[in-house]
Image 1 (cartoon, rainbow over the protein chains, first blue to last red):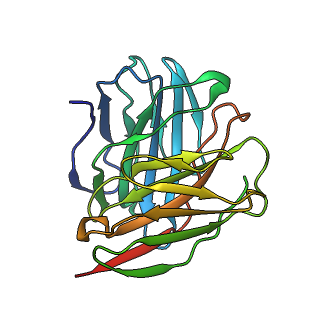
Image 2: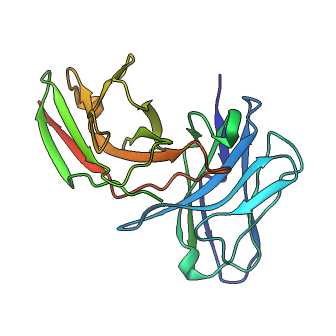
Length: 116
Length: 112
């Protein structure tokens, strides 16, 4: 079954304790991206990757890191989490079509992170 | 990024058609119109997209105005499972690495 898998789905942590949210897709997609969703602010892009070893900032990259060492995985790293990073996080992937345009985005089920 | 404007919420009766409008007056010639929806407690899912011509798929139809400044997502027979937030998004083909900018979307409520 084609899917985007995120782990953990739920996490409560404390300020400053490094954490990683993993994202894996089994569709051989070139494009992967991370979003955060907050009430009243909608979905905002954090980072995206066009292919292995190619990453770039989205709209709200501060406080986050990503890496793309393998095509299927795109982990989101919070080196020193703070309470304002409490949010619902979504990973997404898609094929990359000609001209750099991405096709249909497939989203994971989300990871709800609480930073105390 | 070109922006879209959608009503905050709409209500429909089950088994009736639903027309969800979207205004995008600053759309450029290379912008595709995409629709996603987000069911409660789930990630967004793709619904449909188009450029100039009307489009149909198993989930919905997309009607695009001749001047492309507005579009309408049509759910032919709403069911309770269609209750979700619907997002209208513009995707620029020419923009390398283009990002999806999600607005607030339209909350669709379906009454039985």
